[in-house]
Image (cartoon, rainbow, N blue to C red; front, top):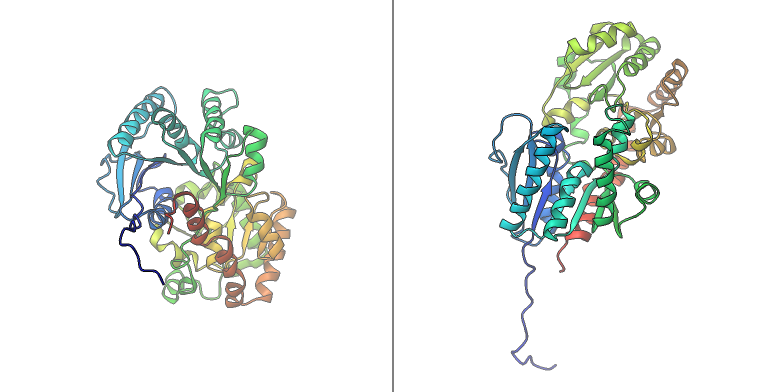
Length: 414
């Protein structure tokens, strides 16, 4: 074997990266804490040692300019949020200017945006600084706002964001879509599919959602749930979600299961807000437990359920999003009642027989779903359902899916 000459060049360690992440949410928002922050930690894991992520947030409440961020490798930059309009346009102009300043001051090498509203800012920053653009949680937002009745197709808000969604799509070096169907949508609607196209659904921390959270005895006793069949829903009412339809569905479940049924709503809505829906459906108040819990306590409360609900309005663009709650439900072994055409999830639930897909918002559709769930619960123990459904979360919602995508975009060469 030949001896080395002593002149070999040592391998250079990868240089630290500096990523500017743009969001449209406040730091304390669940969309940051539960949906964005876990991915930032994964990004740091695959980035070279010493890398930094600069996160821009839009604060609706107390304005603390990023002082609330306490994450190694993550630096917060907070700006005040303004709704779309004259003040909103002024906010966007200031945000673009300040983001460009941040990119230059910190020698940022990539602009990484969460969802297309933030991508609108990111597109301008990318063009004006020459930094490459990455769009995360890539799904149609402009059309979704029309579908849920918030915007009109002729309105300036829709036309502006839709234009920028097309521009982002053509500019992006890479995108991370929430569902596989987004590839076809991008080609059909935007006329282009970015070369580097990843599918990254709403993944779940499977260490935080697991068997230890199922039917905790102390919580079962606290809420009086012994012998109850618990229907759990974690989320909002109205907007992109059903409202009255949820309570009409619960009425059918109550007619079928009677006193055995109890409904656990994990929501920010107050009892006063929800009472009109209950009254119109003819439901007694004592049927419900309404709780607003910190995200850290969601697994224990969600784990009290026997069946879960995902009542997303089944409009066309929801084919391209992914509800976070489905992965959390599956991680806890919960069968799910879901509306049709939601991400890849509705088809998955139907194909694997791990819940029921509502075929409409009619009495007959609700009765059919209740019969399917009734059979599923009658034929399986809670433990058997956990063992059957948990692997679905492990296959389709594991954080390794995100890690693989981020490694492809940012990973250092070993």
